[in-house]
Image (cartoon, rainbow, N blue to C red; front, side, top):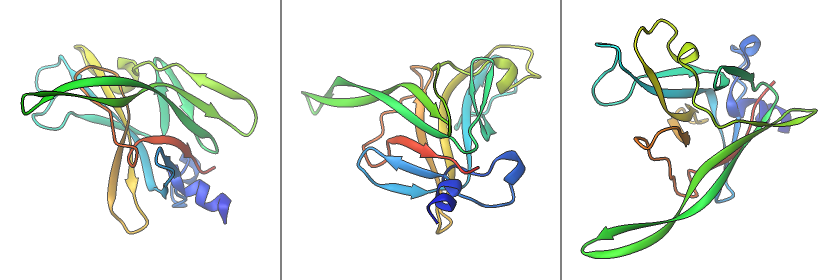
Length: 181
């Protein structure tokens, strides 16, 4: 039972795409959620005329973790997101208020055997949009999928650019994801 829940949390591997096993997503507040039909969503912008859209940034979905020019298969793995807390000041109604925000600083992928750090690098142009002739800039990484009740959810894992803020509250801040085999 626990293994099948683990497998459903993040999503199926390429060989199991039809199995429907969810990934289990753990949050900073101690809660967790199975997420079916999951994928990573890499948002980006381009310097290619007509390739971008107004509103939401275009994105590429993948069942693999992309970092630089490397592709990491996550089937059967556990992904942990490391955070560093910073104090952020903002003016609210003429008063300066300080709050702590957590910013993703790294990823650790644990397989049934060795544990390894994944460099926190934006995916390369060749992985995001291989056919683009202009520049391609990664903006952020989300984990998206469906809850057991069918609600579509998306969780910001990290930002690669100052253009994208990824400081979710503890109830939405992903600290660990267990992926199915």
